Image (cartoon, rainbow, N blue to C red; front, side, top):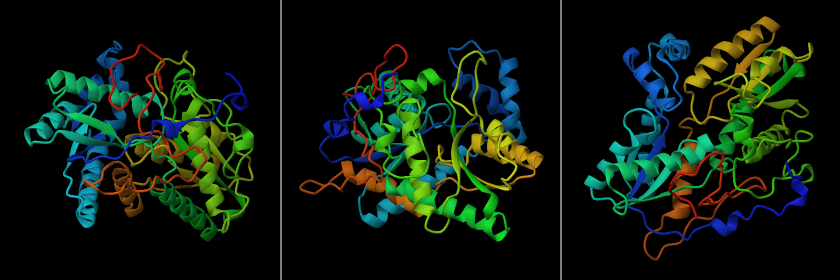
Length: 394
């Protein structure tokens, strides 16, 4: 990889588009099974095209079977949709909120048909991921473009997408509150002196990480916007750079009350062939390698916006068990979920793009030097495979 310091800075501002007037919002989710009979069909959807037999899918299905075949993600998105509607009503924006998923009902195609049948033509999409990667951004944009084509609504519906919001105050501040609360819990237990904070995010193949985001410079170590760790960027494309920057920012914000607490960025939920390199260290490996002086561990699922299956299983079960084996007290803090700051932040993002005729868009906020992120993505953004049509690209 070319040294970050030898490349020009990210010109995200050149891909900021003028605000306009929209007539509806689409909340775009991942989807999850809602009963035992849904589990294998859902996993077939997620792995479509990879030729994975049902026998192997059943090996993964036990995570869902453990919870009655129900992923919490759909109920969490129902709650988020209701919270967004309440915030929109309070601000008097008059925008209805629809909901569609990539891999389970309500599917994108169904949501688009409903939007069109209700008379909407210009739609702003809120995606339930905050960081830049193929799976966290481009895949959603591709699947929405595919749904437009499959429903025959190309040219009938215009879909735009809000920017990635990893360093927006609405996402950062609830994570600051959560980590502060986790460290306070360790202090109450007399474990603050031996505390460590792990920021957990979804592992992805290193090849996908390295091409995440636009093909422009990555920040060098000298450009860290907030303190907290040496060599905070060490490969992994914009996906890793964004998460390390936000983790450093969170620790900087809690340092007034909890100074000098060590932290690390770790990864979880890897899948696929073991021969393919994925981002490391895995959280369980990282816990096992912690110094014996560490007696209390705050686990912050910063890579996720809700407590869905990867959080409920990989953190609340596997990581907690690893802590117990090491004699470490774990405190798993919440995701942003429906925190009022997060909900308000999402509608702030809407108001960056949506204005009534003659109105003024909201100022674009960002808490690191990496943002505010781009509104539209260049055609090669997060592209490590053959290009497909997308929405929200330039």
